[in-house]
Length: 359
Image 1 (cartoon, rainbow, N blue to C red):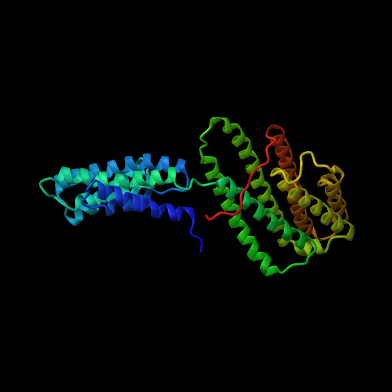
Image 2 (cartoon, one colour; image 1 turned 90 degrees about the vertical axis):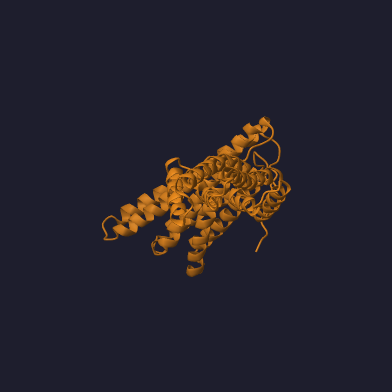
C-alpha cells in the first residue's frame, strides 16, 4: 500500500479547513472538513473547475434550504423533499459532481428553525465554503503533481510488457493462462495511460513560453498511447488465433516472426530515443530495419491464393486480421518515429523523466 500524494493532500486539507473554521469561531467546523474531502482533486485545473462548481452547487443548496424552512419548516419529510428538488436542479444545470456536498449544505442548514435562522444559514454556508477553499489552496500549494512522469512511465511499462508477450507469442513459448491474465492487466494499464494523459493535458505551466513545447509533447504522448494500444491489439489477435499461426507454411511463419521482431525493436528504440538515450538521427541506421508491409502482405496474398480452393476460409479471415493488425501497428510506430524526430528538431534538450512516484 502506497501513501499517495492525493491521500496526503486530503489529510492536509482536512487539518487546514478545521483550523481555519476554528480560528473564525465557526460553531460546526466539521462541515468544513467534510467539504474539503469532497473538493480535493488530482490536478490544479480540476480543482479550479471544482471550486466554481461547488460555489454554484452550494448556493443552490443554501437558497433552497432557506426557502423550504421558511415556508414549510424542517420536518424530516420536508428535508427529503427539498433534497429531491436540489438533486433535480443540479441535474438540470449539469452540476452532478456537486450534488453530494450541496446536500450536506442543505441538511446542515435545515436542522434548525431558530429565530436567527438566516444568520445560522449564512454561518453554515460559509463553513462549507471554508472547506472548499482549503482544498483548493492545498491543491495549489502542496505537492503539485507531475503527471508527465506518471504518463511516460506507465506508457513505457505497458509497452515493454506488451512487446515481451508479442515476442513470446510469435514463438509459441508462453503460458496461456498467464498471458490471458496479463492481457486484462494491460487493458487496465492502457486505460490508466489515457487518464494520466488527460491529467497531464490539464496541468497549467507558470510560464507561457513552455506552452509550445508542452503542446508538441502532448502530440507525442498521444501517439505513444495509440502505438501501445495497437501493440496490445496485435498481441490479442496473435493469442486468439494461435492455431492459425501454427498451421502457416514455414516461410510465411518465419516472415511474420521476423517482421514482428523488427517492428517491436523499432518501437522499443523510439521510446529510448524520445528521452535522449539514443541520439536523433541514430548512429547506425542500417540496424533499424522497419516493418516491410509489402513483403508481409505479399506473403498473405500468396497464402490466400494457395488456400482458395480449399475449405479453410475462416483460417484465411483470421490470418487477414492478424496481418492487418500488424500493419496498422507498424504504421502507428512509423508515425511515432516522425513525431519524435520532429520534436527533437525543435527541442534539443534531453527529456527529463524522474523515477516512479506514488500515485
